[in-house]
Image 1 (tube, one colour):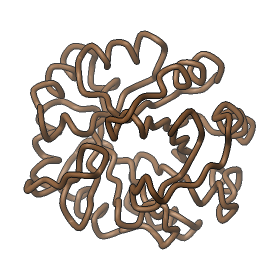
Image 2 (spheres, helix red, strand yellow; image 1 turned 90 degrees about the vertical axis):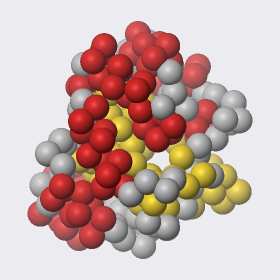
Image 3 (cartoon, rainbow, N blue to C red; image 1 turned 60 degrees about the horizontal axis):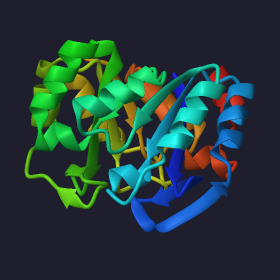
Length: 234
């Protein structure tokens, strides 16, 4: 599954370089324009990230709600979702599933409770690798936990799948960190979605060989390096 990303900051569709809010570029003043374009090009799911919520500097809830209500494909929501109440709210407004990040490290019981209450199909866990270790709180803090150990704990907690983002290459168009994805794929049995640095059909080909469930692509599409329709056909 090829999943285009819509990252929200200040109500606009942006992309960051290596998770740095000071290295952002606005691609659409109205994120709905990006979402509708992806629908027209054949996407079956969009990955929507609330960067402000992830970094604890506000939120884009109304924008997310508008996208969900007006886009006729599945919307996977991430960013700042750190309580059962917030998970419930996102699912109630129509999110296909939520992606949990910081709580996977800081409060793993919420992950377990959410998977049990809402079902594994509605709960994904994000592992954001920065300099080889999981990062959280909008990639500002780094954990001492090994990412493989974290992944095994999350699998045991009952999540429906894992999203592995290599922050060091995210937004750089420098290629996917294939070894990190391969290592994770060899250890866990839950589905894996790869993200970060994907910039070419060759990157997609490498990940397809690993039999990952999906690939999240952002900047490569916005910068015209990768055609979404061609990627979907591939």
